[in-house]
Image (cartoon, rainbow, N blue to C red; front, side, top):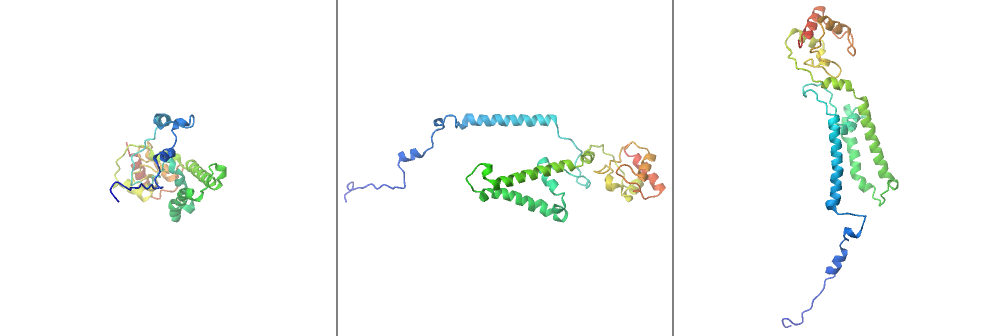
Length: 256
């Protein structure tokens, strides 16, 4: 075969001709009037406008209902009861039940949430039908409604059963008072388990008020320690009359 003669061109059926490739391209959005629009700037501008509305709404709520300012967090205060943000309240409430707390904390903190969120991840593989109507997808719709109902109920229960008065009391900002923990009055308070409810610095707790700057006289404090007051039962103080006098004088002098 001489050079330049007898050459043959062989076509490959796996490679489409340019004309065929052009036919596979999607049509321009202008060919569908009223059904689609350009991403820039039409669609993106609408997204920004919706986002701006929500942003302004959140800012208005922030101004109208500012976050409460509480006292500085004290990691040594074991009496403080924390409250998570609203989107975790349903898990917080779940851990209050006997089957999900105490020795069963692993069930409430890991196993139950793991099954729920694992089910959401497996939902596309469990329900693979082509239908998009909720009525035609009973399995997926049922599980989603069950999850929403459980989250709503647990969140509502958490808010309804929370002791908001105790939360306000334990988060209240009080002026710090220096307490001599080596004094006899403090040792008497410690011996009679006063610090169990009122805190090791007598700053108060969820079930008991602060004992600093009470504004009460020594006689009034002695009467409360002996006879009780509100949630404090009578007979908590087990010491002698002399110890009661020293304790009441110690507490009445705090913060003066």
